[in-house]
Structures are given as C-alpha cells and as structure tokens.
Amino acid sequence: MKIHQLYGVESISEALGLVIIIDILRAASTAAYAFARGAEKIIPVSTLEEAFSLKKKHPNYVLVGENNGEAFVGTDFGNSPSALEKVNLSGKTVVLRTTQGTQGLIKASRNQNVLFGSFLTANAMLKYIKVNEIEEVSLVALGGPNSEDAAFADYFERKLKLESVSLVELREKMKRNIFASRFFQNIPWFPERDFWLCFESDDKFDFILKLNRTNQVLEREDVPIK
Image (cartoon, rainbow, N blue to C red; front, side, top):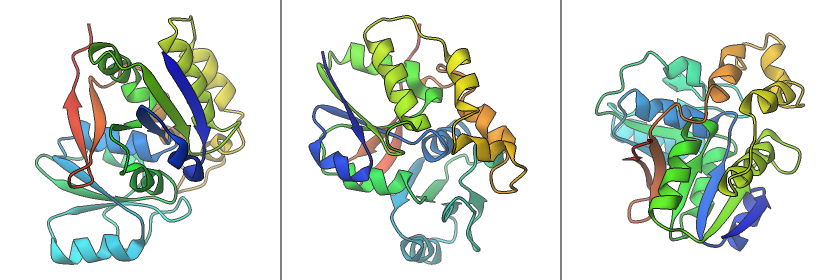
C-alpha cells in the first residue's frame, strides 16, 4: 500500500487515492458526534455568510461551528463534541462551519474518495480500507507538522501497517501539545471535556464520515467492526 502524509489545506491538491482529511480538535470529532446523535447529513461551508444564508433559507437546519475556536453569534452549537453528546439530532441537517476542518473538506471535494477522519472513527476507516481493497491513501493533517493531526496521521499509518501503537500513550503526549493545551486552561470555548472526547477511543463509532461528491455533503456510512 502507498501511504502519503500531507500537511495543511494547501497540500490537498497533491493528495492521491483515498483522501482522509484530518482535524482531530475538533471538526471531524464534532461531526462524528453529530452523526452519532442522529444527524442525517452535514453540509460543510467555508464562510459565516454561507452558514447564515443556509440557516435563513432552512430554519430547521442546525448550525454548528466556530470562528477562530469560539462559537460565533447565531450558531446553535459551537464546534464542540461535548456540546452535542446529549443532543437529539435525529433526521436533522447540520450546517458546519469551522476555521480549518470545513475548509479542508471543501478543498478536497474534487477528489474521488474523501473521508473526514478522527480517532473516534479510526477503526471504521481501517475496516473500510480493507473491505474496499484500497491501495493508496493520503493522510492530510490540516494542523501541519507536529500537530495533533500529524500525530493521528502517524498513528493511522502504523495501524495500516499492522504495527503496535498505543492511543493511551499518544493521548498523554498530546496533552502537552501547544494547541491541545488550550483545553486545560479554563478557556470557555475550549472545554477540557472536548479533549477527552476527541481522544476517547479509536473504535467509538462503527461508521465513517464520507464526502458525497455529487452534492458536497458529509454522509454517514456504517462499517461493521468485528
């Protein structure tokens, strides 16, 4: 198998094969929780204007997102797994706007096969790759080198190679990461619980988050884990 590690939104144009857009803290994790709570689909958008426009046209849509980490005025929920973990989103359409994650998804929408990756769906993605006999994977760490996203890319590559790797050890290391440390500084829009939820397990959910190229929305695709 060919495995490529790429960094940042600007690198997506170089991605080959299955493209996994990685945004651990927090967009991909928040999206996973939205689907776990029953969301039907997620529409990723680039700007606040797009988000508000969709909400105005469709008042029943649920607006989720942030601007530079903080939930923006007018959103229903911030970009926060802990904000969604007990919310009933059954049958709802979610509009998601984030500073980094949704930008990567939109940039990648021209690619043939795109997943939105987090630890929470890691084992499901591994199963998807195996079942579909995928031979080339591009891991795009949006946060760049030395980020939590890059740490996930390393973790996932080792998993693909059937190497032993500990999520517990990685989680402890990530607590000292410059960005992740914000979740331990009592900043209201970076609740500590978000950190633990994002790193909770690599088999938390038995589905993947797949980008539909036709309408450019994220959809849930169930992948049994055995």
